Image (cartoon, rainbow, N blue to C red; front, side, top):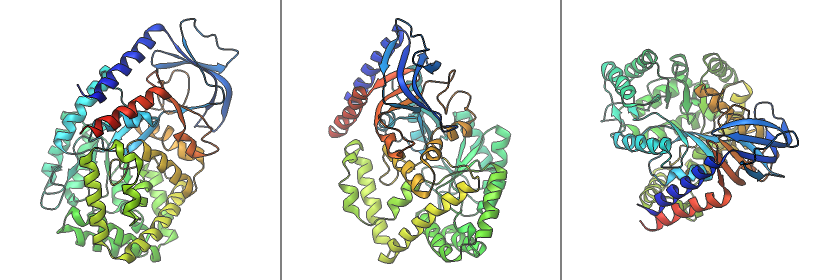
Length: 474
């Protein structure tokens, strides 16, 4: 048994023993209502089992004699955070989420072997063998033919194979369908139809063969990374879409991101407010959610490799992934001329304004990072994403909702998750400072409550140390 797993098992035994003794009472805490924005001061939150039993003024709540009590004077309580675009490809990632207050992950898919491993980790989390977030998973990414799509995905060439892929993924236990960039047009719409028949939602990239309007009208529940959305607001949107589709139709996924970026750079000077307003209104009518992954776009905007290689968080990342990141970044720098990064920074600033415009129009946003994509750190990068949402113009409260209440609404779980309320699941984060004053305060974690079990700051540090030791021994 690895050091990491031993630490996890020991911590679970401690939290299980605590639960057996009685309830958990968090006293004299400031409870933040992410729905309305109010803060209930000097409150006591009484947790029984995995649920919040009572919330009220500290002098009004009767604490059971056998309850474990945490004096949270001066601290702030928020719902557990959600990573709404993550990829859990290594076991070491799991404790990193918890240590950063991420109690839920929408896992956006991988290859067949990764899905089998993920299902085992979910089983271990459910049984209590492993401390980890609740995971809602796509399973295996569905993409176009192997000649052009991801070769490690579920590759489909026609509508019949597309429908079979949806049925197969449901049988394998996927919670939703993840669509990808190189899906043929007819296969994409077959997936949309079959997913509806199978009672599954579908989300992911807008394929190069489909427009943003078509994806929204087809019922795609969320659109990721702003792919195809910014350029859809150009006066030349139709031409840019045709150019992009032609560029990738024979070259495959390797050039997809580059083609998307070129289209978006061209759209910078042809942006049309009227087209944008019409598109946003369509998203609102169709209840189309967006996960912009701004932190990923920020990474793509920098050519300074030394900054990434000196990041202290690399100690938590398996060498295999670190080597992949270094090679990917080097290839990116080689693949674009110096003017690209000037344009990319200009585009990134436009994307920030674009996200604010979508939000102001009523388009629903959620916080996600594409972890563990290029220099995206499980758990850690979500706090950066919240900061970038605020930089884009959202208030700290609105950014916080994007990682708490909005994910609960997206999944239809708002009766049990998303806010700190009596009767809801006790997935909570205790902070040393008020995130409504400064969103960076979400990083100042004093403790995490996971399904009613308290994980103190010292225990969170032990989890991080165990990950670091596990990585160092590889």
